[in-house]
Length: 393
Ligand SMILES: Cc1cc2nc3c(=O)[nH]c(=O)nc-3n(C[C@H](O)[C@H](O)[C@H](O)COP(=O)(O)OP(=O)(O)OC[C@H]3O[C@@H](n4cnc5c(N)ncnc54)[C@H](O)[C@@H]3O)c2cc1C
Image (cartoon, rainbow, N blue to C red; front, side):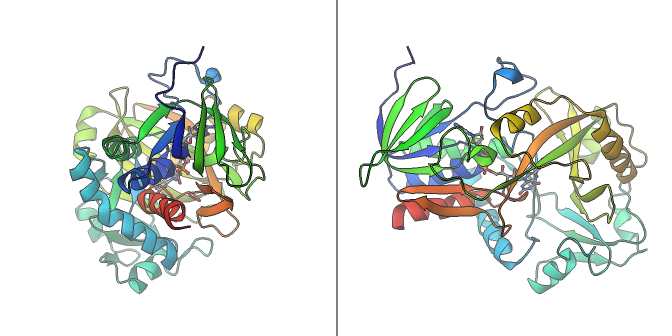
């Protein structure tokens, strides 16, 4: 027998309690919508009671830091991200949960960009975003951050606060605190089906624990798993890409010294690694501090079915990724001694137009997914857009 649900009807059910879903649920419940948000417990390699093989779905926010800044890939992205960033403080104050660390962001790129990614300095200038600029070879930036290094070929821009990083799980906790406070119900469960009951009759949402919940409308915010588990009748156009991050452990003294260092976006112009991103040391649930670095790599693949995606998330550290990522991480911190390295698998979800998908996929069902590798920082605003579609059609 499944545990008795608190209730089995709601005006809106939000499927997925990740970055987009938690934001959508908060905006909806604060607008007075009666809702249930259903999301699977995240797999935590250090603390989950279930083994990774017992987990059916996974999230794309499952580490401790996500870069945030006003510089973005284009004007449309920049506007949405700026809207979210402008609301971080109010969210922290209202929830009592801090998630934003405004350490700034160092952006390193060849002058004019690398020809693959939008030129970040052009975006900073066009949008009038406050920044300091250092020509290639001008290392005066290193007076402030002497333990970082970039090739002399690259120009450096520093975007100050509010750029920095957010703690994704803390942001979700902040959103959910406010959702609960507004009367929303949160359920830890995996949805195994969303069934349309006929014109105007709403939906039935079935869960792994055996709940059957009816709602008039649904927000589908299941991240990389949106097209799986019978959540949607006709799949939406998503491309999944594997992504691996390396966590380099630092000793406590370095963790303290480097904690205030900026995040890094580094268009490294390499064949094996592209578009490197990095956070300063952050404390992880195992009590240790790690620098996190990720990038597109020549080993990335595009899994297309549930089984392949699940196997990917269950993959243990792969030495071939470490061979690529570890030297790149060390090169950025030439004199930092890392005491261990490990990698973590993740998935980035893309759309054909490289813009998050926030749309009514079928009457009454709003899809909110596909951060295209950069959805965390603006997730509050992407979720607000989904809520808007529910409220105003
Ligand atoms: C390695 C990596 C680094 C990144 N770095 C950055 C960064 O620095 N800055 C930035 O802005 N963005 C970054 N991103 C992107 C950002 O994390 C994503 O855009 C964001 O997490 C997308 O939010 P989402 O809600 O769509 O998906 P998720 O955050 O994955 O949330 C979806 C949730 O739905 C749940 N779910 C799925 N299926 C079901 C089901 N059937 N039933 C119940 N629950 C279900 C999942 O468990 C998950 O919790 C990064 C992504 C990756 C992979």
